[in-house]
Length: 435
Image 1 (cartoon, one colour):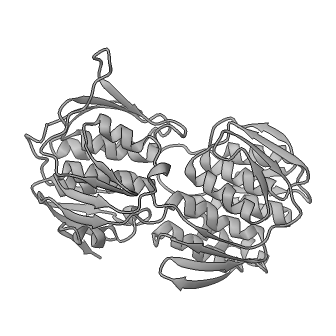
Image 2 (tube, one colour; image 1 turned 120 degrees about the horizontal axis):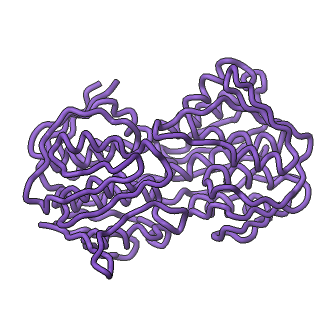
Image 3 (cartoon, one colour; image 1 turned 180 degrees about the vertical axis):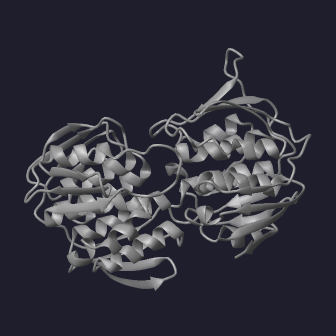
């Protein structure tokens, strides 16, 4: 288990490039299973979750070739069903939540898909009902072996259908879209997730020969086709990393330029940081954040305390609420952070309270933060990263604290952030990885 030793309190300076989008990568890599032809993917982030998925695809029989550090080709000509029915497959797949999106393409192309209950962050209950109800609407027979927590769906030929999703699940929408591309007839998905990740997946599938309309909205229409062919695809930059770097720059009083952010795909993220009092300039497709001596949280028009809450796209992504929370600890003013989706994601605030932050955890979903206005710096501490996003929030806290902090279980951060210590050290951070 790796540990970060962080000596904080120093401003950072320079340029940093965001990695490819983690959440997009997990969808795109599963989509290569929909065709026997070669698919080339660029800007793949070299993070733990993505590398594990690529390794899993290789064990499934996908021919994987690395062209450069961030570019790969995939060709799913022959699938190793013997491996997929093995205990080894169950163990490998259960470590990676994003691998659940293998099921949709396998069901569409081979008439069957199966998966163990997936792993991932321990941030609360993350149900899979949306995925499997969608498959059932397409005609699949669903089975769940409760003794070994193993899901399976089977259908010789899926049939298009109308469905109203019970929640705008990003992975659920992606999984159903991939299954529907090869279904017979027309599938209509209402209350579909419409995040840029899903839009990217749909555009890639259309280049492969799929017929998907309504991209960017919550009403998708998919006309099934007989087969899909190969294509080339480039990932968007990771909006969560971009947001993390904006927050880190403000909290550490750093002057940073974030390069090639795909600004038009950031949605409400820049606006929400501005409401936190964080100023920046858009320079072409870059974001320049000047050093902030302080930043003041806005209040609502009637003078009430600002609330920052997650919501389905184009609302604020829940993956950034941990960053907003930690950044608020050094702001001027008070903010209520409302994490609606996951009931355990705010439980890392006790570590920030130990560092001197003024936070009231109202309940599992809400925390009130009273900012120090940069007058009282956070204290260094020994802490452990509970999940990807809380982990990077704690890293930002440690970088702003005067002195030496220890962050344990940094493999959680590695799951979502590529070489984060190396890239931040290049800006002047002092982070030492201890294996």
